[in-house]
Image (cartoon, rainbow, N blue to C red; front, side, top):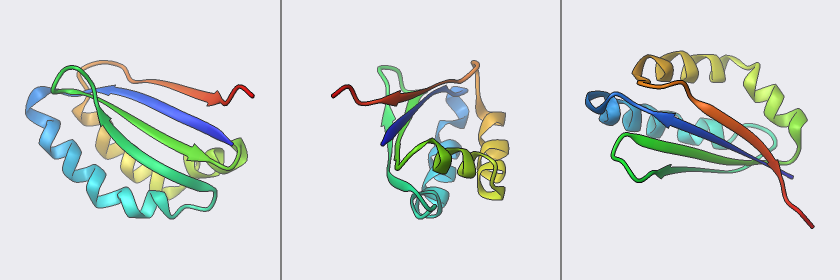
Length: 94
C-alpha cells in the first residue's frame, strides 16, 4: 500500500470554491479502483490544505492520474492555487 500526500495553498477568496469542488468529486475519487481512502486536511493557515489518499499500489494511483476524472478535477483545482503544489508518494516503514 502507498499513501499519496498533496500539499496545496489557495487564494483566500477561492478556498470555499475548492472545498465545494472537492466535496463534489470526493465520492467519485474514493470509488476509483485501488483507492482505499481519501481525506482532506486543513493546515495551520485557512488556505493551506492536504489531500491524503491511500492506494493498493502505485499502478492504481497512476491509472487515476491518467484518467478523465483526474484531468477534470485537477484542471478545475489548479486555477485556485496561490503557490505551486507539492506531492509525495510514501510507503509505510515496516
